Amino acid sequence: MKYEKLVEYSNTRFRRITGVKRAAFDKLVEILRKGYAEKPRRRGRTPKLSIEDLLLATLEYLREYRTYAHIAASYGVAESNIYRGSKCADSLLPKKRSKNPPLSKQERKDNRKISKKRIFIEHAICFVKRFRILSERYRNRRHRFALRFSLIAGICNFDCFA
Image (cartoon, rainbow, N blue to C red; front, side):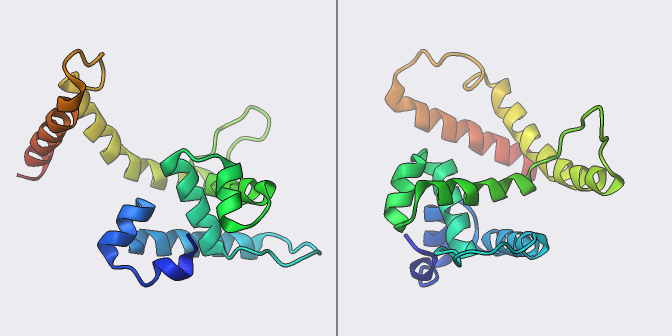
């Protein structure tokens, strides 16, 4: 599905399809635009997909576990284009330190910003694992798993926000 069609959808339907809120999607597009602007321009054809469509394809890959071949077929481009476009999401991940060229001050500052946001998610996952529904094998009936997990998530939300 192309981005032009998603623009018409409501905020809730947009989030159900992409997995992120519209404001977060717009921020990601801004970050990618800045990254592409800093990248040196190479000669050749102009890309068939816009930055929004590349981000949307990356979200489809991460969220729906579809292969690059299936996503490329739905967008009408080559598989390698989708693969290269999904690599742009690496700029949103923390950089790893190496022995030879250590991280610069700016990279360490960026890692701290990312870590400050990630810590809330890590704590929420830790809280759910305390109930051992995710940390151990689930031995009850499968059709009750969603209900129990929802109850535990509700307890977690009540504990954090009440």
